Length: 220
Image 1 (tube, rainbow, N blue to C red):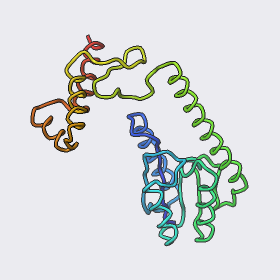
Image 2: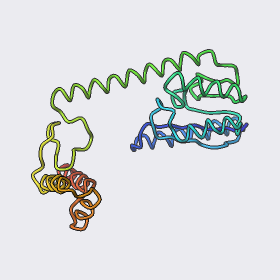
Image 3: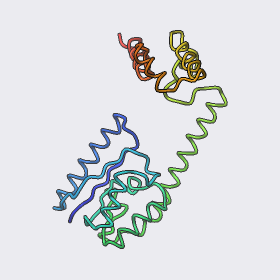
Image 4: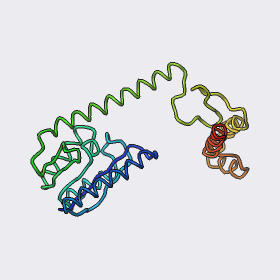
């Protein structure tokens, strides 16, 4: 049996990288116990609500060409978190004679365990929608309270107590200069080139500097 292993994590944060390694180890052990072969690992770092995942698309393309016999995933939500995509993958596999197995024992078409597929597809879609609604409501509440919604403040600003304030350094004047030069007819590339040649710190460099300043305040 040739196994296509699909692994997905939502972000590239450190804890998610640990999850990625853990999932890979689970599959290696599972496949070794069964005496099967690994065709390929398909790994995405993206939300499961969208079908526009590069590795998932490769998996679907390879399934259409029947390059493997089984799709393995930790659970159905790793493959898809909406019903339409879940059934698209299910129907494709049925047409190509490819099995789907999830390590949580919810789905195993090899043994005929498919009767819960619809329930799990619906459940994960509802969970995803509820999470989305909670995030939107949180962002709306922060906006109403005048709190900053992003993770990194815009160039020339800093966040204090959840609110944006103009920084007490050279960056606000740089922002004013950029606007002034742009209104005078200068293009974005020419403005950026002049700033770079003058050694003006970029947004990324300012963010790194701020991070170092905060670390210096925390560490003894």
